[in-house]
Length: 239
Image (tube, rainbow, N blue to C red):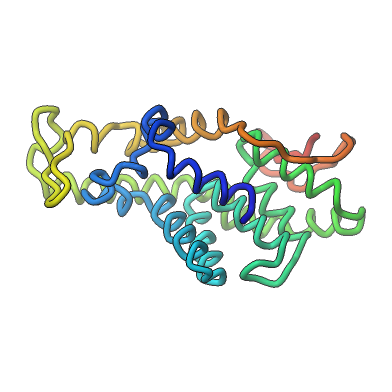
């Protein structure tokens, strides 16, 4: 299993870590209450992880691509890993680099290091191909389009679910989950899980501090830009 898939599986099985990060996807009661259905980035990523664990690799990469449409950087990185190794899809190291560059768009250390390792492993001709392919991928999956798409989904699902639970956002109201007990409405509807800006900040905090493990990036070298986005946020490939 790839480093990111292995790491995500380990995190999911570590209650202490999940509690420290206040990760709702590791809380069975939160999931049963419908939390993940309101977060398509997490929902499709989980479906991808489940499919991968079952050996359904083609289904897994399709689910990861769906999560990627909502800006899930982990899923974008996993697609890159699967393309790099040819698991569930024909091997394509150039597209793997472009996907990993997309995953590194926010500067998360794990994805930046892996992207740089891919870059160092490719020939100059392959690197040029990656630049030629980047525009189309960013046009569909880059933050400029993915974050508004996710924000719309978060607002819609929060409104739908809160509307069906009168008073569920009050701290003294419990959401009852048959067979699992109940959960505080204020915990379920914590703004950091539903407000698009706070939700992005929650992800940033998680991935910027996810430094476990080591990625071999080879000898440092000066790297050129794969993709030049808007003038205010150029996408760079740097060691």
